[in-house]
Amino acid sequence: MPRALAALALAAGLTAAAVPAPASADSFTQITDRGTFVTLVNGRELTYALGGIRLRVSPSGQIAGRAFGQPVTGSWNWQGRYFCRELRYGNEVIPANCQRVEVRSSTVRFTADRGTGDVANLRLR
Image (cartoon, rainbow, N blue to C red; front, side, top):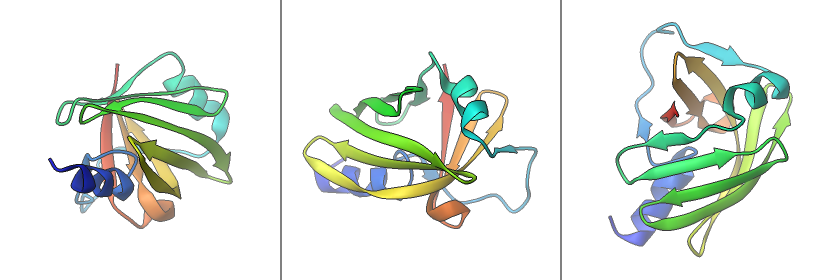
């Protein structure tokens, strides 16, 4: 995938795993507070097989990992009911975005633009 397209894909959600939103709520549970989110991701990796995406989101507000062979770094905070992040993918700056977070089993769903945008489903490992 060309570098510019990969950066665009990362901007669509947290990662390039953007997929159409399902028609129904298919049993995902929304995470609405920082503490629950930290408990969910602390010490684990968020992954997506296509593109070799592997990210760690730390309780201290840092994001680190790799996607499409390039480093991914950034920061995050919790605002109201949303995960808000800023990312850098290689040399590209990905604009800040606040996202709805939902979980079902080992799948974490991030929906951009406070729940109205593109969807990224990642696996917890």
